[in-house]
Length: 600
Image (tube, rainbow, N blue to C red):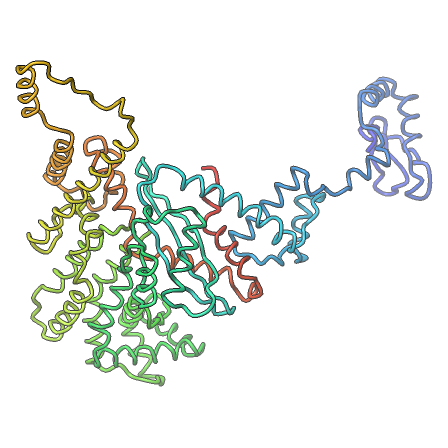
């Protein structure tokens, strides 16, 4: 717009006329059509009638650099950014990250609304096709993240622990086998990464599992000697696979608790019947909007919060616990409902009583399952967890029904965890956890045996260190002893040798002293982080700290793999069911690991 309009305005009644703001004169805009309007008359009027303002207008016009753009400049403004333009590269990478992290289909770039949205943000950006993102950008980002993880793995790591599991998609004929890794660095920070979620074709035999695990480790150049332990489920093919590949492994404690509760409690006939009735009632409300609406009205009338009844998943005992708990919370509302409407089944007074007892007994198990399923739960949590649960179940109860439930559950728990306190992986980890130390073993004998395991491990570490130093150190730098020149010199040397402690004996003794001093101190509160303790006390207990770095790297459950497959169910959806296996693995790898590359 011309600067002359600072002194004029368009007439409200006739748009062909301009009114002078200085003298109210009415001037023609130069024609009868909009295309013929100009400012010549306005400028001439300003020059003749308002010389000072005309001088101001002229000064503004001469100082202004705004000129009519050339045709070439106009086309340049409308030209799309090239793909290698830094701004375009930045937008494309951010767009791909959005697709990865927010589980968007690749076809989102073809959606009209999304295209209009990007066009408003950056009109010059040429939106790439989904094939370009899939074939060019995804592999590029994948390589960048993989290099980042490789750098992490090349640092000084004492030991790496893994989790693995197998998953099959419900929307695509695809099975995946996972491998997640975690380790503790020298500053006692915990690192967790996903290494693989590889397509698993054919029969899931132990040999097939062993072959694919071997290939996974070779891909990342991880020697078997660096593998501390692999956490797995209790299926026979997985156990066989670990034996064939030659990797130490332990059971997922969450799966083991599931089996113990199912065998010790949910398998009882009366309990199974009560749970079955509960499932039928909840299924009725799940499949009838009218029934649920009526239940909501009753909840409001009774002054209860409006909540849905929770359906359980039979493979998860804690979901059965939540189902029973939701039924008990709505007991009054269900009682009113059944007096007015029909239900497919009725919960008897005895079954209500049984459900309440079950919820009371299973509450500690539910709490413990949540705790051991945390991402920072270690193998050191297993023995204390089992000890606490056994103590809870061993408490005498006057109610005969509860007493029977507790005894059967206790027997199942002891059966499933019978070998835990004989496994060095659990025992040493428990001793090296400052929250537990030697306080949670079932008796003094098992505590003593656990300490012997730890002392033996200390001795092995020391011998390996000495052997390594002797192998690496040149003979010229080893301590040199002069040959005795006289008989007196030989006696002096003999007495000096008797009075001094050789390195072979002093170092294990020093480590044992560290252990006794460490165990002699009180345990830290359970709310404290064990890695934080060792980050502070690694100078006081250097040998024990090295062992803690190794043994506390082991998780107590395969939850990381399960969470990975929860992500997989978001990656492989109905809108992505045509994804090829390599692209699904790539998306899953990036979904899990891409945030590791973000600058904090």
